[in-house]
Length: 465
Length: 148
Image (cartoon, each protein chain N blue to C red):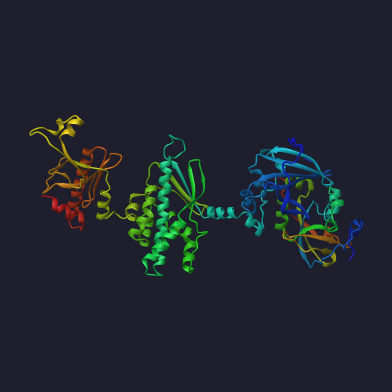
């Protein structure tokens, strides 16, 4: 038999080994057995060599996942041993009387090449009922993996190597989850409303589906950031033929309708608009657009079967696509957004006549003169006439009023919903200048399109002198 | 039907009818691992003889009558894929030890011998009749993987 550089052992590395399944035989003799020892460890025992003195067997301890992948035919016998996770394997020689002649231990990476099966040594008979029960937990995870979208995120700069920040990873996961849940929401609702007009029942069922189908992480890798996201259509129970079809097609449909889209193509954008109304597109696409639009990360999405792959760094989302797909916020939405503020306080301070507030330097003096404070939102921040931008001067009948807010990063935001003006800056004066610049451009647009029906123009007319 | 290797069966002094549960092939296209050329002395041998010829230290003393009887047959396959698949599952070392290099195919007829029912691997044992000349009925049709 082959001379192997191995270390002799005095005894067997296991006790109570019993054959669980004869997986392959050769001329009515076992060739590959699945065995268990008395600690319920799983072993693969493979006949690898013989001569006139007897036979040699290779014993490798495997975990259930390794056994599962061999038995479902996704890994060959050669791969199962060449990639075995155990650090050590054992060579046991039996003489012609089937008595043990020698026991040797070798590193698993040192298994002789000739002791492997052929490249195409795949198990072809599938899981028996016994193994289906024995390995059922891996069947579930494997089914999820096979229905996964593979999201890979890399940083656009390499200051921290290929690692992405936890914040960015969370950002990607959160927004993709929102998109997938939005898709479930939209498609499930549209399906169920044909069944019943009972909104409460519909909402309850949609919420149940969202909860059950919210993306699960089926696998991940830590180099850069790769995560396999899957919606658990495996265990979701639904009634009705159409609901069953909806569930069975959910993964494929989300891929086709939402992920496998050319975000640089106006044509693809128009197809999306035809299929989904504004509210639906907001739920499904707006979170994804946030991810695609993030300049700090390069993202690719594919699926388990490699039926598609989108690399959003090579073909980034275009403004025209966004303009088509993502509906502009309504005035009510903008105003609602504007109301989210951190504290702004109105303070009333008593000052001697003629004294300037800027003369108050000390906090103690400020407090001494403070009469009262009131928390309120400054929704009436005036930008007074005239508004000067470069060489242009615009006279207004009344101040241009904006909503002023400040966030927890101390960024000032000025907004005028009706004119669709919005500026953000850490310096309030810069934000004001930005608003003025936008105002100037709006007037230019108005002058070039006077006949166009535009609510902004109507508002503008009320301002201009 | 008189069998070519009846003496091997007789030497075991089996306490069972051997072979049993066999049928005559009916123009069955069969495949088997082979040496080349097809006339090689180690082709078409029953396993009990082949083991001796290649020094396979198989201990028949430890085996029951059924096993001994089955090993008095030669191994064949019902199609070339099954023949190749089975080969791939064997370690390269054992493939080198067995020494087969090719696949041969031919048509087995009723007067060539008797066969067992094929198993799930498409493998069956064949007991050759003493009048058969299988080397004239089989040809080499492909190579076996003996490198990886």
